[in-house]
Image (cartoon, rainbow, N blue to C red; front, side):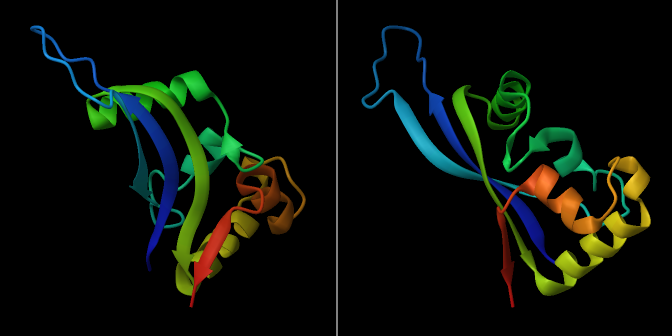
Length: 122
Protein backbone atom coordinates (compact mmCIF):
# COMPACT_ATOMS: atom_id res chain seq x y z
CA UNK A 1 0.00 0.00 0.00
CA UNK A 2 1.20 3.46 -0.85
CA UNK A 3 -0.33 6.84 0.04
CA UNK A 4 0.81 10.36 0.80
CA UNK A 5 -0.76 13.70 1.60
CA UNK A 6 0.48 16.42 -0.73
CA UNK A 7 0.72 20.10 0.15
CA UNK A 8 1.89 23.24 -1.60
CA UNK A 9 4.20 25.11 0.77
CA UNK A 10 5.44 28.65 0.47
CA UNK A 11 8.38 29.45 2.70
CA UNK A 12 10.78 32.29 3.27
CA UNK A 13 14.47 32.33 4.00
CA UNK A 14 15.58 34.86 6.58
CA UNK A 15 19.38 34.76 6.52
CA UNK A 16 21.54 36.39 9.15
CA UNK A 17 24.96 38.08 9.23
CA UNK A 18 24.28 40.50 6.38
CA UNK A 19 23.56 37.70 3.91
CA UNK A 20 20.90 38.29 1.27
CA UNK A 21 19.13 35.77 -0.95
CA UNK A 22 17.12 36.30 -4.10
CA UNK A 23 14.48 35.14 -4.21
CA UNK A 24 13.61 35.13 -0.52
CA UNK A 25 10.38 33.22 -1.02
CA UNK A 26 10.07 29.73 -2.48
CA UNK A 27 7.19 27.43 -3.29
CA UNK A 28 7.54 23.68 -3.20
CA UNK A 29 5.65 20.43 -2.91
CA UNK A 30 5.66 18.76 0.50
CA UNK A 31 4.56 15.16 0.94
CA UNK A 32 3.61 13.44 4.17
CA UNK A 33 3.40 9.65 4.20
CA UNK A 34 -0.11 8.48 5.10
CA UNK A 35 -0.25 5.95 7.93
CA UNK A 36 -1.86 2.64 7.10
CA UNK A 37 -5.59 2.61 7.90
CA UNK A 38 -6.19 1.62 11.50
CA UNK A 39 -2.57 2.24 12.51
CA UNK A 40 -1.44 5.15 14.72
CA UNK A 41 -1.66 8.39 12.73
CA UNK A 42 -4.24 7.16 10.24
CA UNK A 43 -6.68 9.87 11.36
CA UNK A 44 -4.35 12.61 10.13
CA UNK A 45 -6.92 13.70 7.55
CA UNK A 46 -9.65 13.96 10.18
CA UNK A 47 -7.48 15.96 12.52
CA UNK A 48 -5.98 18.37 9.96
CA UNK A 49 -8.25 18.71 6.92
CA UNK A 50 -11.74 20.04 6.32
CA UNK A 51 -13.57 19.93 2.98
CA UNK A 52 -10.31 19.49 1.09
CA UNK A 53 -8.48 22.34 2.82
CA UNK A 54 -6.12 22.67 5.77
CA UNK A 55 -8.41 23.05 8.78
CA UNK A 56 -6.32 25.26 11.07
CA UNK A 57 -3.89 27.13 8.82
CA UNK A 58 -1.83 28.70 11.63
CA UNK A 59 -1.38 25.39 13.43
CA UNK A 60 -0.49 23.50 10.27
CA UNK A 61 1.87 26.23 9.13
CA UNK A 62 3.70 25.72 12.43
CA UNK A 63 3.85 21.96 11.88
CA UNK A 64 5.27 22.49 8.40
CA UNK A 65 7.81 25.02 9.68
CA UNK A 66 9.00 22.54 12.32
CA UNK A 67 9.26 19.75 9.75
CA UNK A 68 11.10 21.87 7.18
CA UNK A 69 13.20 24.04 9.48
CA UNK A 70 12.20 27.28 7.72
CA UNK A 71 9.62 30.03 8.21
CA UNK A 72 6.47 28.93 6.36
CA UNK A 73 4.22 31.61 4.89
CA UNK A 74 1.43 29.32 3.70
CA UNK A 75 0.41 25.70 3.28
CA UNK A 76 -2.35 24.45 1.00
CA UNK A 77 -3.61 20.89 0.83
CA UNK A 78 -3.52 19.51 -2.71
CA UNK A 79 -4.46 15.83 -2.58
CA UNK A 80 -4.24 12.42 -1.04
CA UNK A 81 -2.27 10.49 -3.66
CA UNK A 82 -2.82 6.80 -3.18
CA UNK A 83 -2.91 3.43 -4.83
CA UNK A 84 -6.16 1.44 -5.09
CA UNK A 85 -5.19 -0.97 -2.29
CA UNK A 86 -4.67 1.84 0.23
CA UNK A 87 -7.81 3.70 -0.83
CA UNK A 88 -9.95 0.56 -0.48
CA UNK A 89 -8.42 -0.16 2.95
CA UNK A 90 -9.02 3.46 4.02
CA UNK A 91 -12.68 3.30 2.98
CA UNK A 92 -13.13 0.01 4.83
CA UNK A 93 -11.53 1.40 8.01
CA UNK A 94 -13.65 4.54 7.84
CA UNK A 95 -16.79 2.44 7.35
CA UNK A 96 -15.92 0.35 10.40
CA UNK A 97 -15.42 3.49 12.51
CA UNK A 98 -18.08 5.98 11.43
CA UNK A 99 -18.59 7.08 15.03
CA UNK A 100 -15.11 8.66 14.97
CA UNK A 101 -16.34 11.02 12.27
CA UNK A 102 -19.91 11.67 13.40
CA UNK A 103 -21.06 10.57 9.97
CA UNK A 104 -23.51 8.12 8.46
CA UNK A 105 -21.45 6.86 5.52
CA UNK A 106 -17.95 6.52 4.15
CA UNK A 107 -18.61 8.87 1.19
CA UNK A 108 -19.81 11.51 3.67
CA UNK A 109 -16.54 11.22 5.62
CA UNK A 110 -14.39 11.38 2.50
CA UNK A 111 -16.21 14.49 1.30
CA UNK A 112 -16.24 16.11 4.74
CA UNK A 113 -12.48 15.91 5.19
CA UNK A 114 -10.80 15.31 1.83
CA UNK A 115 -13.30 17.03 -0.45
CA UNK A 116 -12.67 15.90 -4.00
CA UNK A 117 -8.90 15.92 -3.50
CA UNK A 118 -8.12 12.22 -3.73
CA UNK A 119 -6.02 10.91 -6.61
CA UNK A 120 -6.07 7.13 -6.97
CA UNK A 121 -3.29 5.64 -9.09
CA UNK A 122 -4.08 2.23 -10.54
